[in-house]
Length: 514
Image (tube, rainbow, N blue to C red; front, side):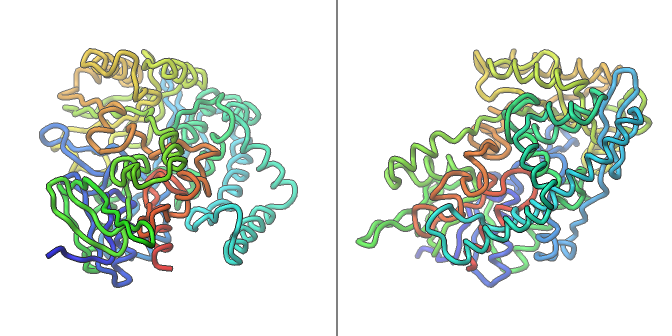
């Protein structure tokens, strides 16, 4: 006899875990299915070399404190960790650092400008923050409550005052480069500040629209944009979420890839009623929630035979090719970065915005830059369980590495990218190449395969005006419901989007609980 549940959730990334925890806490009978043998999706920690562990997502900077409180994650061991400095590396050791809302390593004019800039951006981010943990209604044929939501959003922006509101509307359409050039002189500072508006996306400093909006989006978390590693590493968050939901009676099945969403056809139309695993097991539920990316959900699990052709075309057109590679190094000792005593902060290698732009230009034409820009940290300095005693893990995000490389991702091409990345690192940490016991490089194509994410895209789809808010991932599926009754979405491909924040899982759960 097929076992019956209230809700089945596909995918145990952090959004799937958040959604499951909320539903289970309200007494629903929940089954969470995960294809991998570990929980967490891109935040899962895995051993990449004997004794050395890392995760694709290596920090959090916007996980919702509301979710932490609602699910009482502190009772399950979650501690967010202290915010890190962001350090823009310079080859001569004259680095630029940002910590506690202040910048060092730049001239007085940039110090003064940074104070004004930070105050402005944090004010705008605060005005936007309330939108992330609520459903953005569709446009047209709105109910009274939906009209009220739009009114509240308008009042929140209007509350900035006329001058600030005008300035916000002006800057959100600017390329990051224009905003940086308007405010600062130091090239490293400009590159650092633009980084969070670009990471994980298919945009560069000169790209029009969205980059400034993304910078604001990154600033809505507890630490106002600063990054942190939870106590216990990324596992500290994932374990707390899994313990919270299992304590409420939810079931978790790992190594359980879903092959198909069961769609029932009747005289009343279509409805999602269950799932079939790839091994043939079948489970039924009142509703199905997909926490995997929209393309995978609709094209692979639901199937185009159950969708209208116009909707299918819109899903097909979603831009979801990843642009970030991940480098993991198992090190025999602590690398010596020029001018840094203990390299336990978040470090950016991007000497100027042109370096970012040139790497982007290479990626546009299917190549990976020979002079990569990257974000680097040594998580083993904050979580000693990630490496054997006296040894360390280096984790780096390499930006502008195309999913579809011209000529494909051959072993030679991957080796060359790793070689270029290590060469770049050695310019700031001389001798690091002699400390490497093992190197692992994951291209977007590798991430797509290993983590079952279409295109290897961190955010399950680009942040763009046609793929944001009430249009994310597309209309008819942007309010967590879908054209198929009983099927919901809860992944980074939904509003408010990607990053380790939990917003999509939170919002989907609240739509279901309505």
